[in-house]
Image (cartoon, rainbow, N blue to C red):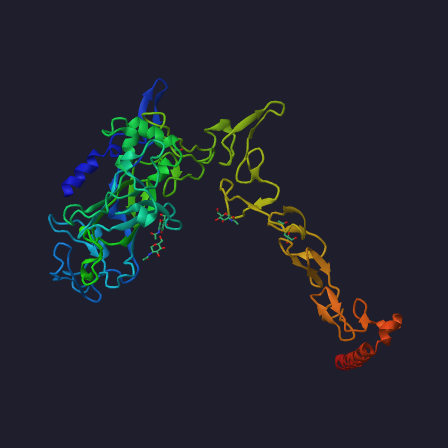
Length: 527
Ligand SMILES: *[C@@H]1O[C@H](CO)[C@@H](O)[C@H](O)[C@H]1NC(C)=O
Ligand SMILES: *[C@@H]1O[C@H](CO)[C@@H](O)[C@H](O)[C@H]1NC(C)=O
Ligand SMILES: *[C@@H]1O[C@H](CO)[C@@H](O)[C@H](O)[C@H]1NC(C)=O
Ligand SMILES: *[C@@H]1O[C@H](CO)[C@@H](O)[C@H](O)[C@H]1NC(C)=O
Ligand SMILES: *[C@@H]1O[C@H](CO)[C@@H](O)[C@H](O)[C@H]1NC(C)=O
Ligand SMILES: [Ca+2]
């Protein structure tokens, strides 16, 4: 088995030959110098670098110990799973171990004792590194393959997930999708998400153990069944939108949705034969290094590209410090056969000595001024060398000039500020009454209502009179019989009609008396 895997790896079309050196020392007419090429690491067995998580908690068998049987031998239930006994335990790590010949070791779930409640399990594989698949993913099931399952993938370390492939013995019934085979896909549909019935039908648990995500067949759409036309594959990987990403993952998740049924319906009287058992998950791929590295090492538990071309980062996804004269670009498989390194360049080596701090990769000569200036500065910069921040942005004090985060948006409150510019520490210029770095607060004695306005009333100086209450510093709500901004005016003074109404007179008279009392009391207490 081990030999076979090693042999397969060796023969993988994408594992050999192409793009395996990043540079070479060549002699030209001008003397010896380095020549640079697009390069990528070798394919590896990715299961050696993975971390696994099985959900939900308690889905692994053996706690408490449990008996199970097989579809071939449904009434001989002598097999036992016991998590506390190393010989009878089936923990997740057995999906990734090296097996002695002939002896399958496997993770196993609990049995379907809760039928008809579905028996669901998730197996999540994480690399904390983008991986490019170079061969089929092969999942080996003991005791029969699931009748419904689904493969999902993430490209962002598990923050978001996307379907990768659906598997069912009846795709229409399980997922409402027609059954398809990868072999029938065409060049325009090579990255289509399909549902396949090829790996879910009952064929005897010993005979058909594997469930695949067919990477080779998809490559063969471009390279031909014998992989002779690799040039076409590399060309397509560069040009077809989303094709490269289709084969790229940081995480994989198998959602096991219904176990093997032995080719019939579920037999309720013997649920001990329904469970999942996975003995191996083979994932073959290479570190994604954006064609800037031919080595990938496992350091401190994480895969890491050993970047060349003056790039850096886990995936060689940015330029090294002081090499940001041009914007970063991935290397390219094209032109064949050596590709383009698209290396990062040090200040002064590219673009005719015009430093743009990595915010522009174009310079232009302005004739009448006799200067070379950067064109289309990015990252909200401006200036001859993209050395200033655009209006409405200010300089990030903790970022170098060649940092993408060098300019921070001022974010001045549109109503509270005079304009959207700010000073070097991000302070905006406020309108009268407004305050705060972004002018989204009010000074004391001002209230916010689409801008700052002076208080009409408050609890200190502008107290509502005659028992009126101050509403949000905006106006006094006066008792009947009073008016004026601070309810300081009796309606009787000006409006005799209001006084003539008996009830209102009575009410306002009462309120007046009480307010007057309170007013006097306040004064007594204050002084
Ligand atoms: C499996 O993962 C999916 C998300 O991908 C989640 O919705 C589901 O609840 C999980 N199932 C279990 C059994 O944890
Ligand atoms: C993931 O990789 C990054 C970058 O190498 C590293 O800083 C981080 O610690 C890793 N996280 C885990 C959980 O290993
Ligand atoms: C990277 O920088 C070094 C040091 O300046 C230089 O010698 C080398 O040629 C650069 N490599 C590439 C690919 O530009
Ligand atoms: C300022 O730059 C540092 C360094 O790049 C960055 O970590 C930080 O997020 C930036 N601040 C803001 C507000 O963008
Ligand atoms: C920016 O404005 C604030 C508030 O007016 C002030 O405190 C700060 O010193 C100013 N910063 C600079 C660099 O002028
Ligand atoms: Ca195993």
